[in-house]
Image 1 (cartoon, rainbow, N blue to C red):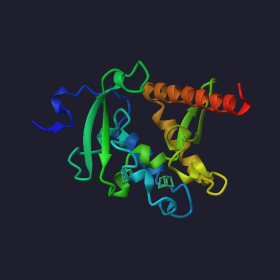
Image 2 (image 1 turned 120 degrees about the vertical axis):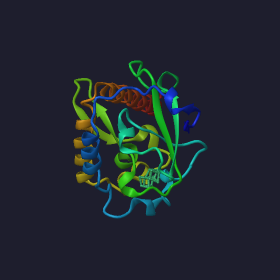
Image 3 (image 1 turned 90 degrees about the vertical axis):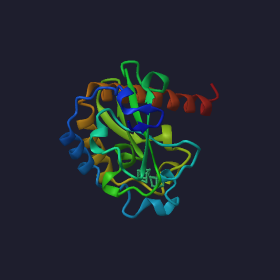
Image 4 (image 1 turned 90 degrees about the horizontal axis):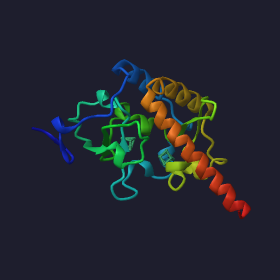
Length: 198
Ligand code: SF4
Ligand code: SF4
């Protein structure tokens, strides 16, 4: 019996997904666009691909495991309980958490790597937008820290928005995007409170 991190595969009860492999393939192909006109890794020695803090890795979206064989030599798999991490309460089950050895085949990288440094954002009215991912990237990514110097290309914003338009058809992914959007609202309002001395 194969073991993936702390669990045998038969013990894994993944958060369900409504998206097909073809939909993930479409998302991956939409996201084959670079955020800058040159390799952004030159700005930071590819910091987001390194273990910039102990244990850092990526969560896969529900259903994204269809894009992997789970035998990739460049990935280490683990499964964590959604309820013990910062996912919305309607995520019931396990979530795949992968760590890479910083040498992925580029066409295989997960959604989280393809869309960074942007994140999806749902307005209170439910409209999908994309924003710089200050929640997870403010300390590491020059495109976020020096956004005026290294502006993300409009084509990349468009591609990321199109990809998330497909992904949020899955109600649980939409719920997670909603949850992250409210976290971002809170973070932004606390920054303003700090600046205004409230
Ligand atoms: S941290 Fe930002 S600039 Fe550096 S490689 Fe990652 S996405 Fe590119
Ligand atoms: S999977 Fe690839 S793009 Fe993503 S962090 Fe690892 S090396 Fe970087």
